[in-house]
Image 1: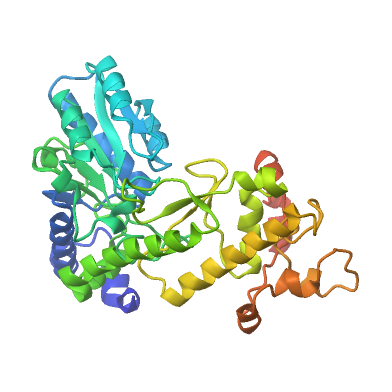
Image 2: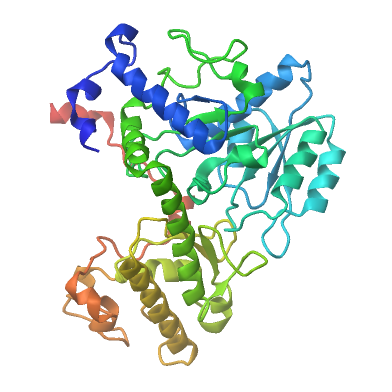
Length: 441
């Protein structure tokens, strides 16, 4: 990330004359070729500034393709229930009507349901939005058959690249026959994920869609039949592309494939250990997950009146940011360790989950009341634990230091328990009245 601070990159205006930024474009062109090689696609646009913007751009490209064939009626998009969460929103933004495809008991797309609905709308079918591997944490076993079937009806296949970290170096969108896909450079390719910084969601396309890549009024980018720009800058968040460039250049083909293997191995290591106490909702036919897993927490509601949100908040006392809660399945936690966590960190998380399971058992056995226990009151702040009054039936040590290693590196949540649902339904504007700004001058 050091080059981010170099003025040679940092101080360049997005519309600087091309002859003044030849090095920048050499970097972008080389990165684009690498990403096309990794995805098995033909060409790329760096315009989209996020994964969601990449989804919209991919659908826009498909729309322009159908438009060129005078098939303006193709407005239906098939989206499996296992798809990435932003897919339906992006489809709606693109003016498409969403038809949801069911999944089977193993988390795979229900091929029969897909064929039935695809045939029902075959004249209006625009595309299938596919997340591979799926958000259920499995590689679709019939993915090539599914793609071939959609193609047979004259529709296109868009792949959400959010889970590309389970593909790089092992397989690719091009290998399975995808027409267009986006990439989250701010996930798979090392750019910091979240925190309010810029994202990057470039879109790669197969050869027949190259001419429909988005153009820009102030730069010679995109295809001859491409639509209008999807970003203010012709090359999107170009500055942070340096990180992905350096990441790929330093790792090389072998290193990238190794990172993918670690992402899959880490997830399966965690799943193999966690399933001793927790139910892993979906696995492939051989019992393995892909790059992430869904932990089913619904049985704990009956067992001890403990919900998935209680577990998520209690994890903060153990020093962990909660994983994804109640998505894509309600009442679950979705855990994705990625390639970057050490075995020691994975073991700490597993130990924390096992300790929480024991705490659930203590509630189920009536050792602690269901309305006053470490899970229902989590997270515990320093002010709460250090207060003069303590009326809970469990100790302060159990609240704040449930495992010995936490004493050495304690993370204190800044805020105690909040009512998430109430907050979501009762938004309060924190903006000060305009008169307050006059007073501050």
